[in-house]
Length: 598
Image (tube, rainbow, N blue to C red; front, side, top):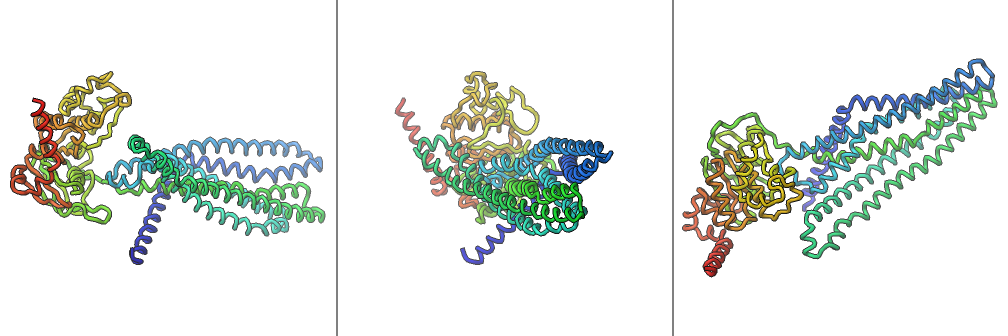
């Protein structure tokens, strides 16, 4: 990479990090507003407790002076001391309880926001983050970030005792206060160094944590492959590769915290001794009394209370760093929807106008313009990497093109409401994920009203799934966790789900790849005869899919090389026949085996 390119890349990453940081701060503000009442109550309780702690030395010192003089007001002030101490304890307890509620509500708010954005973005944007990383962002990091609103309240309240104590020292005796102020610059430097070092260590720790979670999830998903390949030890080493860094950064955070605590532990006694020495001199001179000296020493302790400030600051720093991890999900672009409805009874005419799609800086689909008449079954064919799956994603608006537009029955898909889009455009995939508690619920899963048991069974029959489902212990009521299935059976249930919600456009993205040839052809026949009529886009690798299609769209290097019927393309272009060479060989071998069996 040339220096200008490297500089541009660094600048782009810096700008992106700044944007994520702003998004994180906005999310934290939104979380605080979501629990504004409780957060305010936390702040009120902590400020009340801080005020009580500030009042305590003055009340205690004055009470001591009254008792030493045997003044009549001594017992009343003793009761006042007890009341102040009780108020401080009660307010601290209330703040602790409210803090738990605010943390929980803020965490839930951040998770809902991040999950909603994750589900509203295009799938390829969601795939920017590995599943393990996404899970860590939504769980551990969201939990840490959710503590920020209450932590800010505690940190603000933690400033009151030191500031109030310094003021009280000046009111008691100026020279005693000046003795304390000599050490304040050292306290400020200590806090600055702590914040800087903690922020760096936390960022590195959380990044290593994310990568470890991502690798662990990958290994769990590929457990059978790892076992078959005999690479368990290698995977274990890969997953744990950043564990030493985690340990290093974790120890570094504790070292920073411990070093700050140790330095403050050395500084605080020096400050207290300085205050005590000056206060003693002033006491001997008659400038202050015994009670005032006691109050001055207590206020010096409060003013030097860096532990509370440091703890609150550390919680805010950790939470903001975690919020930036979670905010990476909030920064995902939304796949927005319009307000238009599709015309009633439309045939499903699909039109692509100058569609271009870019991924990773490279153009994957090049200016595709195409009209697919309503009710047509279209086979999208081409070699691996030709852009078939991306074509299918654009056709049903799982993603938007970077240039051009896609229209369904004359309406641009960008302008169609989300409800109408998912009601009228269905998908089936090569590796479907089954959602729901039971097999029947997995087939019925989708937008719109519940299709009912009869529609579920009809869809399963069309997908060739009814026979094996009825053999399960509780048929369609069998829980998915108790229904071990092969890849082909899972694929059939995915097809059944798509058939159950078939609209005017149905996209099958290699959705029969795990089926045997006979079952695949039965599904193709059912698709033509038993499913709601409409336009079908079939990403095809099988020769039979192209043969049965009304129209073939032949992609090559992201461009439409040719369109037409299978028979015409097969007859006129040897390169087209080469696309299906492997499948033709399999069909020939299968036919030879059947002949031999006869």
